[in-house]
Length: 320
Length: 183
Picture (cartoon, rainbow over the protein chains, first blue to last red):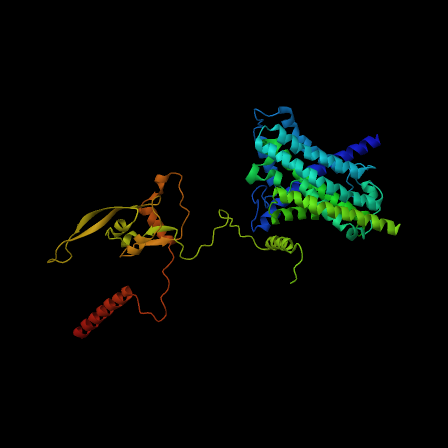
């Protein structure tokens, strides 16, 4: 009975985090992006500095008609937003928030699980692109696929480097083995992981698959109303997951002063600092061209991650 | 400063971060009134007391957006031997602000200082016909016209004041003379 209750409480907590944090990140993006461009951003919704803008957006999306194009593959078209969104919820389950068992579910193969499940998320875009019966959607979907192929590899190699350093693929295990000097040791891997995470989320400057000036909105072109909102939500949930995962793997997660009592705070601080970085990068850099995107992955990120892997191996052999 | 790879990227990040810490430029107009320059040219106001219906403004207007109607009135002679005077009376003075291009020629050309620039700008209407504003509305805007700029301290007096002073001195002198005659 207590285990059932315990599981239930954990599930609800993860669901709450999943529903609230992406909105917080989205609102932060609204305001931070506005101020970085010398604007104010939303100011009306909710009264105080537009804090309820995303709630208002949600209400607006819910009122819109749910259109499925005539030539579309109906089932797949309607399923795609869920496929894009749910993996991030699942990934969130395995990410530790604080020391001990302050997480949804401790998995032995946590790192594997999270990375595998995040790979599924990109399938949502592919399905949407293929099922929309629209040239631009198809182009967007294919670009998503190309980007996924190119960036999944450095991401996995960078994650593998941490797993090698810790000698385990369990996220709690990795955090347990963490020492502060891992940060400079794994910094190249952290860079590679974070950048390829951005690319997998199709965040600017890696948003070629949704380049509005070329292909309207890529795979999401035909979507309206709530389904479109789900795609947008999945992007922000993705930011949360990638930021949290980078914090866990490369910045020591809950490690910090008074980690026993304030561990969760450290984890949240690191996660939101990285989410801020995601927004900051989006505001600062222009979109990469498709060929620049590919060249960056294959000629910069993959060699860097391989070098990191080699460095990790050498240091590991030397200290053991 | 020595160049290092990615310096441009770092500079870009610095620019956006610096902008974030600065004050925004957004004008929250309906909530906060804009601070306009003192002699902003928002709308044309009419001081109808000064208007003599000379029609110069209506004739000079490049897009013919000033409508003036008037009639002549005969004033009875002031002195027994004088002729009766005729005078123009303004019946209608309207400016169609849907045609007006705010060139200000009417204001420049008015010889009697009857037209002025007012900084008022909130007179949008829902129907284009309502943008033809009649004399009462144009007169109302006179209250928003800022006072004319002060003269230089060493400048000579404006003509009106000079004329008024001359008249007053004349009257004073006449009164003195009358007093002396009495005594």
